[in-house]
Image (tube, rainbow, N blue to C red; front, side):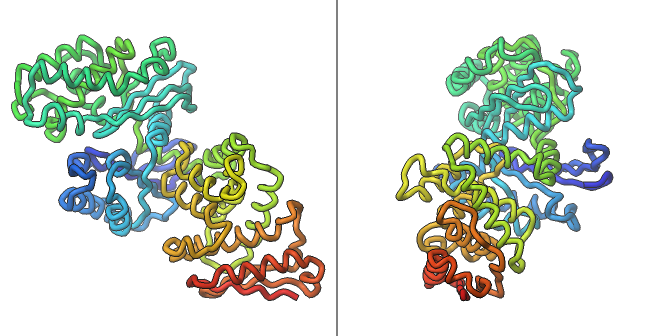
Length: 492
């Protein structure tokens, strides 16, 4: 990307939706515009964990306003990331499908650990560089993320299902503030966070940073009251608790620096902050400027450079963990990539990269079962804490791994996507060509897509020279029967 390029990140949080637009300048991204709307989707989950129609409409209305500002942005310059509420919502696909159409860009639901990684990336990019060991804490509407790291590199990451919206609804449902309610909320928060005590203990870090909503709100209130600029202390938290108890109700809280949209969830947020201070023996926490949205912006930079793309490193790590035959994986990936490059559109650099990863991982399930390795491989990929990947990306990789063997019609619904269909044809063809686990002879062999007809052609004499490969490709043509796609093997 050239200096001056505009990049945008949309953070679909449980409490607020945020839009950050930045301009690239010598490796740094400087803010151009920032929009925030309180949507409170986290409070719109019903008892069956479905988003209510009202909550979905609030989100869609906000995305429509963001879409107006993002008009004209290229797809590779925008990243929209959804977090805990949409991780939980059973009907999230309904919201995401319509929301993506309204916004004009796909919405990625990220896992808790991936959210934590992006948060750390956003925080670290806006801090002065040092070799200090950092603890980064982000309390969102329905989840809390903890990260240990140094410089730009995160180490331990964890995500817990508690946040300011959820805890306020559970322990301060009617808005009343009592000492008993705060004690119950803090004890419950410590119970959820207890497993973090050892991993994120005081000996593991030098400086603690608080990121985003709750931490920013608490820091602003304490600074306005004279408790120090940009810092949260135990004394400050004690003072803040006294102020809330004195007010007795969220509607009566009047604190300088506390925004109107933060008042209904301040009780839950403060109780979680206090629990973390006690559990992790924190004396002081600095308020960080960076957050998830900045991390998403810098992630866009990395994704444009294949060598620096964290997802490639994650794929290599999965291959090593599950003892994948790397030589064979590379063989299949090379063959699939060659076929994909020669096929007609639709295709893209991102789709080509995704196909390479699927080829590298197509045998990742072999350590579990030889007969059903493709099913186990798909499960592993979709359920892995895979750094750099959003859940929809893992789902797409899982579909390719699942579909590379057996009848393609089992992916009937997914095959409505022409890009995925072409990827699958290339992958299945490559696997067939590499059946002998040696480099195949693909000179003069091509795969072309015309509408919904895929044609594989070979040079004269190829079928006679490689009868088993020719047989497998003819069987592949039969395999695509009863799908909307036609696969034709023109072999001589």
